[in-house]
Image (cartoon, rainbow, N blue to C red; front, side, top):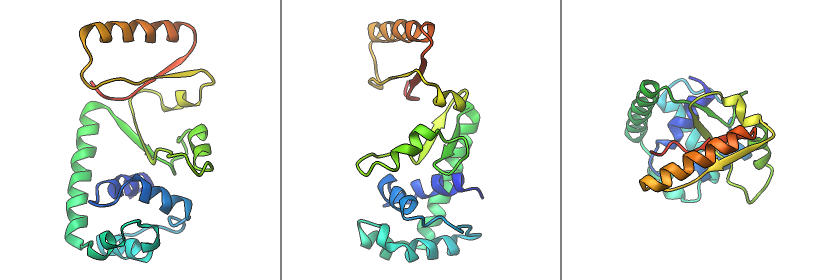
Length: 165
């Protein structure tokens, strides 16, 4: 299992959020990390209890909780594969250096996982813009957004958008 998969797995454990995963990353907890079983994963999490804001989450975590998380992770991976969506974690060599720099900023919440369609290397472009909006845009908003994205692309910007509808 790759570190990317481990991070995705952790995101699917009830009570473990990106904030906790960031703490594990920043505290270098993943150095020499390679659990082969869910039992070893549970031991790893309990050894790193100090990274958890809510200590009761880790105290109450069971092997059954990890099995459920693994099932959710498998389902998510299958859904991504069927849509052509890929993912990388903070540890992946393709993870954009600009995003890694955010990890050095104490107040910045860098993404621990990036889901993407297309060329991940475009996130290293000098000129980028992002489209942020609602999950249920009006037809007028969709049209306006498409026109803006097209103009920005024609001007040499890489246009980044979330994967909402």
